[in-house]
Amino acid sequence: MSEPNKYYKEAKRWIEQAKEDLSSAKILFDAKRYYLVCFLAQQIAEKALKSVIYFNKEDLVLGHSVRKLVEWASKFDKRFKDLINEISILDSYYIPTRYPNGLPDGIPAEIFNREAAESAFKLAESTIKIVTDYLDF
Figure (tube, rainbow, N blue to C red):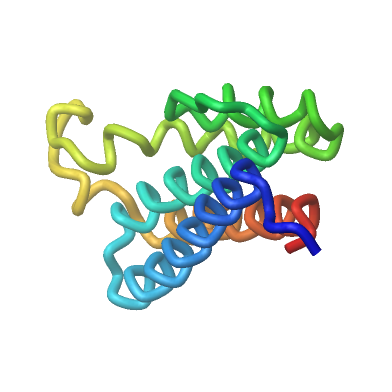
């Protein structure tokens, strides 16, 4: 058997980190750090989707928008198209979960609640499942 190509290796690196982040998000959820769970959910989806794009032999995958990345991934497989409307909400967690000036008042630790974190976590978890089913490794 030949050695996996560089795209396979890069895809594997990205999905493995997404899985590690999912484990960390669970710990943060249990610790009631809901704002961080929301941010990590966005990061998990971003990394998982980037793994799909690298797997499809793209050399440079830039950007942080989950919506743009899932649209890109949908060019390779239609199952990602079904995710577009569902996971796009994660883009709204990219900045406001980390910076007080991303909110009109208060701080992220006060604003993001259990319900938001639970929903974000489930979206991240389902994205990883769809991606790992697609990658089949």
